[in-house]
Image 1 (cartoon, rainbow, N blue to C red):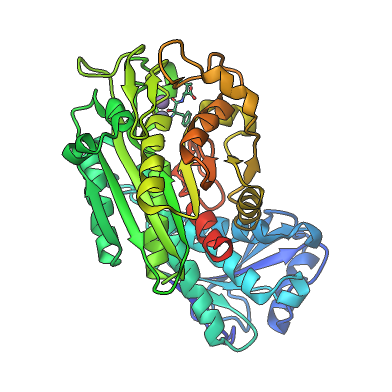
Image 2: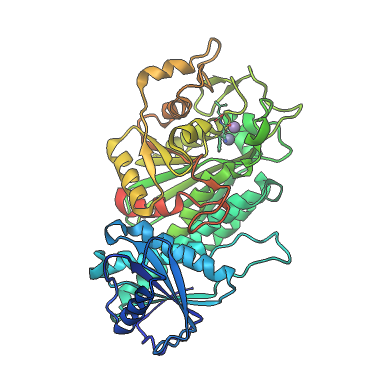
Length: 490
Ligand code: BES
Ligand code: MN
Ligand code: ZN
């Protein structure tokens, strides 16, 4: 879908040529483009301010039917995310106008003070992701995504740039796969269905796939996971995906929370807090999509993906508040609240992975707490880690990909809040205060001395209204972040 070209503007046959313009500096060196911009500026209809646009038709020397000039604002404010957003919004604009063929005139890297690879990567990400639609369940008013998006550069198209485009497309495809899983309604992704969907796509990419079914989970005593699943008609599972690289010595484990619907269980959620809980498997979606992408890109590391999948429902069979259960690690847990279910399935997955695969590094992703959304809002994820380097690497990848992460503390003395009178631990803290931290501390006990990080994505995993390069629904948060990290951590 992404094409890089160095063809002349007099020859590129597209509906629309999109040109990014800064208000204070030239960022293009093509004489035709410079003339077009100069003329528009002269008419005073357009000054290049952020998100200001103007459309010009039948411009001399340009084959495209129309040119859209898109303002970026000041050059010093034009960073990676500004380019992503501009590209995403332009694509969305074209979809709305039912235009099928778009070409971006890529700014000259030296003039925009970035590497060519950065300019191209970010514009392609924004464009690819902005072109994604979740409209499977729509009839008549189905929108049409663009078939191809071209990126015109003024230098020769090298093999390196072609490879970069292929990598961007693969990672964005992973992101949209995660988005689709998250946006799918819970009736269409029961634990059985989601398990099958992950297994089928993972098998196609030649990942090693293993599924622990309910019988095996019982036999292996993953009691915390089973306690969450107890109230649902659907059967739980744990999907294990392996991407192996011959010669690679170290293994990274990724664990993703896969609650296909979180009603809260017997501590049923009230009011509006229940309505978006189809998104409670966003961690699972990100982990599965990252493994599939890593396999596609033949990323040179060993990765294990562990994905516990359950539905949290109330029923006569459901686990009750006050029940005491035994986790896979052997610790007993008093259920203070059945709505604190994510941490229960995660600890069994984490202990299982640590025992069975002994990874050098473990990262879990989970829509774990509303408290994290209160703390950081819905655009930034919380990172908790027992390892400074790992936390720093996650935050750095978050900056680069704009899947922003902020490190939060794991204070030893807060562990007291999780004490139970009757069991080894309670699954909730005895106060609402610091809820994201107590949840993370609960997990930390089960990572033991493995280098571990927990990313609470309850905020950024799901959008009620779209953004520059995402529609309403799942965002695919975590896929670009993890794919970026895979290069860095091992
Ligand atoms: N899935 C929710 C967390 C969540 C909240 C995700 C908002 C996305 C948006 C989680 O299982 C949950 O219910 N957490 C409780 C924990 C509490 C009972 C200790 C919460 O945050 O209220
Ligand atoms: Mn819950
Ligand atoms: Zn949940």
